[in-house]
Amino acid sequence: MSRHGRIITRYGAEMLVEDVQDREIHRCTGRRRAAQAVCGDFVLWEPAGHGNGVVLDILPRRNLLSRPAPNGREKLIAANIDLAAVVIAHGMKPNWDMLDHYLVAVHNLPAEPLVLCNKADLAETDGGDFAVRLDEYRQIGYPVIECSVRTGAGMDAVAKAFSSGTAILLGQSGVGKSSLVKYLLPDLDIRIGALSAHSGEGQHTTSVATLYHLPEGGDLIDSPGVRDFRPGRLDRKALEHGFPEFSPFLGQCRFNDCTHRSEPGCAIRAAVEQGQILERRYRSYLRLLEASEAT
Image (tube, rainbow, N blue to C red):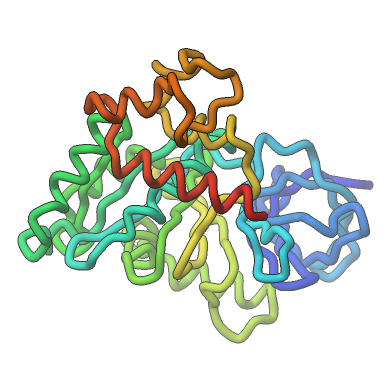
C-alpha cells in the first residue's frame, strides 16, 4: 500500500524519503513518474522491505526552484519552499548581481525572500558602500537580517524567521551557509551520520540539497554553494515581477510591449532618471533581460 513521504535528499537515482506519519527514513529508488523528484518534494512511496522503498509519484508542488545547467537543461534544486534566504557575508565582496538573480528567482517561485547577511562580526572590514547597499535593499522592502555565528548576534532573529514552513539557504560559496546550519542544528553531525548510514554515502556532501527539521519548528533546506547563479528562463513580465520597485510604474509606459530599454515614453526609465528606481538595479534588470533573450 502506498504511503505519503517527503524527499530529504537525493543522490543520483536514489533518494531518502521520510514517511510523513512515523518520520522513519527509507532509501528509495524512483519509478518513471518520479524521475524528476527533488529535495522537498512530497511523494507517494511504497515500502519494499529492509528499510528500502520505491517512489511511485510526485505530489503536486507549490513551487520548484531550478537554474540553467551547462547542458542547456534545467538543474532542479528544491521544491515546496516557503521562505528563501539569500546569504551574503561581511568580510568578502558580495556579488550584488547574483543577489539580484536569486531574488528574481525567489519572487517567481513564488516564495518569501530574505536577505541574510552573515559574519556581522567582520562588518568593520567592509568597504564603505556595503552598508549603503544593504540599506538600498531595505528601502526596496526586502527584510534584511545581519547575523554572526561567532558572536551569536542576530541568530535568534534567524531562528525565528525559519520557525515555520520550509526555508532554504541560497548563496555563493564561502558565505558561511554551513556554519549557519551547524549553529541552528547543534546535533548536525549526528543527523549527517544517520543520513549517511541510510544513503550508503561514506560522508556528507554539500553537492546535494538536504532537508533538516529545526528544533524550534520549521524545516531548513541546505543547498550547495555556487560560483554563479541565474534564474531559469523567464519572460519580460516575469523579470519585471522580480524587481518589486518597478511595480508602481508598470502599465504606465506608452507601449504595452515596452522592454524599458530605449522606447519613448518608458515609465521605468523615467523613474530611474528621477531617482525612484536605483540605476544599479535597473542595469541588473537589463542584463537579465539580455541573457533571457539570448537563450
